Length: 358
Image (cartoon, rainbow, N blue to C red):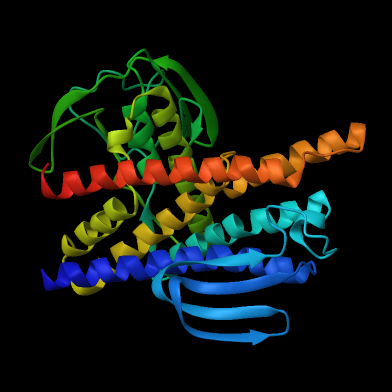
């Protein structure tokens, strides 16, 4: 129990770091572009320490669950030429995107650290076909084939192969493989799950066995880290698609409570404290990229919602020399914020229910 509490506290701390780095992205670019910043805070709640340097108040606050960058005139015109609302559209765009950019950078840096000690990784190269696999041959799959695409999805990591095979609806799979240096397309490939024996265990899968390992040099680790980060982005988009299509319900979503609990599970299930720490770091990298993508969605109150208004206003101004009044945009963001809070409450309730009663 004590170890689990340690991992949960670590998860809360890391979540605060993710949000603080996000806000630092806004702060840094705002300062770089000469936009007035009234306060930059790490943490939320009452201030434990605060100092004012120049025009900006800097503070550390009691609860390490985030932070904020308060710019002059974010939601309304104040008459100050250095207010956010008075800036050109491209400056606003840079400042708004910078937060998510920093979260992606954080995720990439963590993955680079995790892969820094990795000397070899499993490759998406078939090393064995299970007994009973009926599609072996030149017109099918062969040992040594490298799978580079499944149903139009590029294979960035070895694990992508199984992920996208499992997502297929069973109506035929489009594969792209490389065999002896040649790129071969297998369209509507009639793969199906079979039961087979491997390594002393009975498995239910597609009968493809990947045992090939590829050695990594420094450049290979960098490419792998970039691929893993890109894979995180794709996983988030896939999850959003499942949510929109109804394949995943709101009840299956996780908020901060569920995420922290999942991090605790990942840590305590590990073989050692060090392995648990590394697993938590991997989880943090994914959540940081997740935060970046979610923040760019065109939802009021999120950075993506503000970006949407910036682009719409830029188009309107181009043709009419007018723009949507800042106060009306502020009303929309306020309404969006209240709806997001309501959604967070619902998700938090489900998280608590799943943890204690499910």
